[in-house]
Length: 457
Image 1 (cartoon, helix red, strand yellow):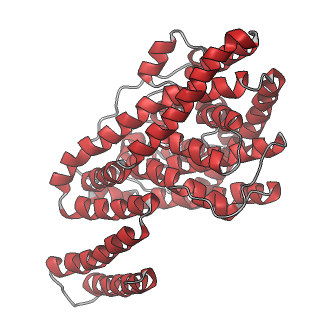
Image 2 (cartoon, rainbow, N blue to C red; image 1 turned 180 degrees about the vertical axis):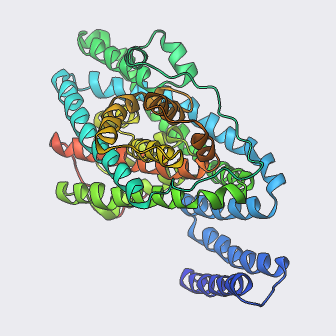
Image 3 (cartoon, one colour; image 1 turned 90 degrees about the vertical axis):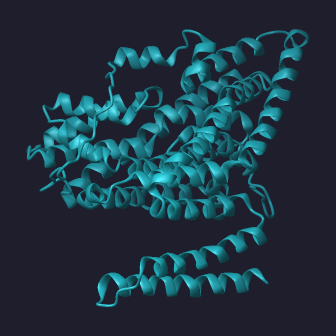
């Protein structure tokens, strides 16, 4: 059966399933749960058949997300047992982060011996990151003021959500966290920025050696980088299982009561993130001359992984590989992407601005324009420590609430849908950082757009 015919059948079956669900929920007609479930699964069976014919890892990841949603909806208790699969995938990904960052950065710096370029890339990246994240903060503030999603919010009866323990960090802690106390310790804790700083200094040191002394280490790091990219390709074959399991656990865990109460906040966040993508990142990409279609294909897989696992780290190895295929030099990819994980988390900073005002609205605390401007300025500084802190957005949100004398109970309510919001903001983080690599490469005059069709699987 041809792919075109399979797609036509899928569209017909999905239309039938949609009509049955609409009739069941919005008319007097009452279909049994088994009929509704069967109507969906018949459509999904043809989606799986399409994935077999397509033989694409990205397609399989998307299909696994659909299957995960169904498992979470229909078997919520069983779905919780699948968390082990998503944890296996995340742990495998984390083993790649440190060696791939170290190897690619050292090769990028010492292999070209252009130390001035490292400095140039540094200030250009920081400048771009600051402008874009400030726009994200402004959009978040405007969106929540327009929708006023926090007005009238109450905690559902019996809702019991504990705030995890989180220690807020001062600016001194954030600065200290950038510099590695122990390289092995940074690897153990998965701290990206200290690994980057160590690797950059190591690469500069290696570049200053004579050719005879630096060649053995340079050859080793080049081999290590290529090996880790092959390692990534092997692990990505497990991605559909890890991604599907992560979605199943999330859907099975969410309660319908808290979801209904906070749906307005959820739509506000998704709408604001969409506005940021279309109103900021897309115009920037068009102005700079980014090949949009190729860029979309390059980021589709890492964004899908980030969306399902709510982890930017899980998407990092594949994002690095695909950006390099898209024509960004490895030395730029390996510097800009990891740095962006601390200074350019567009989705997370937008969420923080939006959530902070939501807390005030829910608590019926009036924030003046001056207070909100001060909040934006505060978040511009404190959000830079997001990457290095466990449950980082929560830490920053708690600290902001405390600074402005806001209560904590609305944050408890937010936790009820935090996983759904985390999916969206993490995906935008990945999109923003991938775009940044092309922008810096073009700014450096080193972007080489590949010709012809590209294979990102």
